[in-house]
Length: 125
Image (cartoon, rainbow, N blue to C red; front, side, top):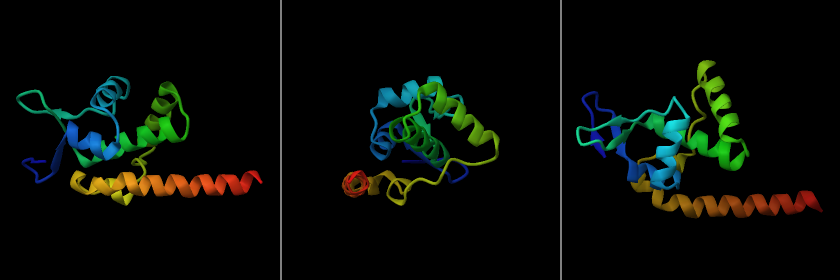
């Protein structure tokens, strides 16, 4: 984690990958597809993400993986959300914290997934 001049926390791509639970190549691809996702780069070319960009990444992941949007559909939805003045929905508390606290995120997500499956089974009965 790096501190910028304005005391904003900046996160390296590896840290963001742990929080978002995606591979670095996925983030690099999303940067080419989603114009609102433009991390700063250090002098050495390392990507540095702000919390706002992490929120956008988590929203993109939600749109693509949870809500079933295509890349094009997710791009339109995200643009609409951002143009309407609506910030991306706040990240879940476990994911919104600094990446160091993301270690328990996988366990929490697994528990939520288990609970959702149980609810789905009840609805199907």
